[in-house]
Amino acid sequence: MNRRFLLAAALASLATPLAARPAMPLHDAPRRIPSPPFSDGEGRKLTLDNFRGKVVLLNIWATWCVPCREEMPTLDRLQGQLGGDDFHVVALSIDRAGLPAIRQFYQENGIQNLTIYLAEDIRVQFALAVQGLPTTLLIGRDGDELGRLVGPAEWDSRKMISLFETVIAEQRSP
Image 1 (tube, rainbow, N blue to C red):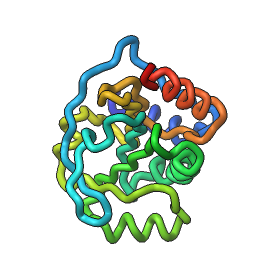
Image 2: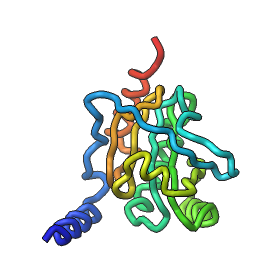
Image 3: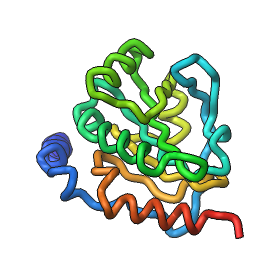
Image 4: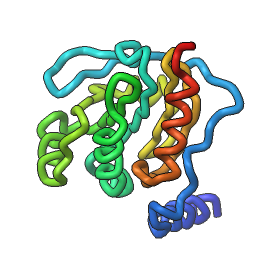
């Protein structure tokens, strides 16, 4: 019975257009999160601490995840529109196939604004309590989690951009 419910819920989420899905829910209060290690496309070792001072949209995804593939162009456009000193999209792949699979996906899908990031082991998923893909965390300038969405979204929609612009403005130093 439980398996059938989960399968039905998963199929229903795939059938729901991105535009019809809710905006990212924010937490009542910021939550402390760990800063697990990962690397960029050049092999440099990083953690979320490298992005302190910026509002970060951390998207955990994989090339084999259909909903992840569906939303990736919207993340690319969002980074192109808002990315800079105050905001950065970290599209963190958990692909076991590694950098070649991610590079091929970026090339085939015209992803131009997103930097390649790769979690080389399962530590990121455990550390950030990832329960499904895609999982996206909104992280404040101080490294605290402000919100979380499990499932795909239209990240470059007016509603989302307005939300991110508000968070960026609220997170600016006085």
